Length: 367
Image (cartoon, rainbow, N blue to C red; front, top):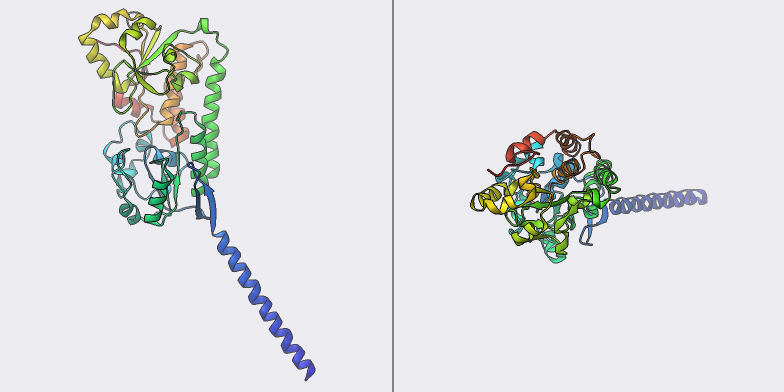
């Protein structure tokens, strides 16, 4: 009898142990089902521990960054602005199937996200560049019940640490961490290569240079420039507009350009027609400029469409370097380099397609 009692007691204890062990394991798995990441505005966001299978990207440039890390395979909806105006966006040329996806909202910097349309495509995660205000992002997350991860292009956009961090976030969430690191490394290698080729050139051996017709909140003429132009900084150029001592885009007085009289002028092709129209009204002004008289007027591919097209911007930097410092870039064919960049970031050679929209690299005429 005693032995039987002891035997039953052992069975009960063993059962309790097994139940306790299973219960403990379930709790551990439940906890492991979620991981917490910190997004680009400092919010802690809980997402599934397994790679997200369905994503949407909203706001200027969010979809582009997802395309760079192969997130395209998991995108389940796009904004209307992406479909209506794909011009100048290489990722849409690389992945034309995007236009066939459901619309998740109007898009554009002046429109708020549409929670109902986003919910309709049932994403696991929402990537957003719409705002830096935590309250707005939290509001969208509360309305949808879907994790919202804020991304950022930073201030410089082209070679900005915020872009790298945003790519890392996307890679982690969609299970493409290795690809994200390869993209980051490639961009950094381009940055270092451009600097290495140009940093030792003495200022007195550099031509003075100006960039005009830069777009910001629309297209503009030759007066639109930047004193801290990131692509000129990338190739250590002698930018005459640095004297402005002002960050970001600025409209200068055209008399200033006559005063500076740079050796070389680049015109962003988005504003090229405006420059030509202005030339017809005021030929005397343009022919006062040495760069116009002496054949020093060159193009630049537009790269600001729904935020910065990073691949096009880097391709531009190599072309600027080739024009300014032929010896240091003698091994570079700008068109081939552009195709290499597009191939790496988007899987396709796209230079000819991008050039088809606006014209490619080369000297410009104003007649």
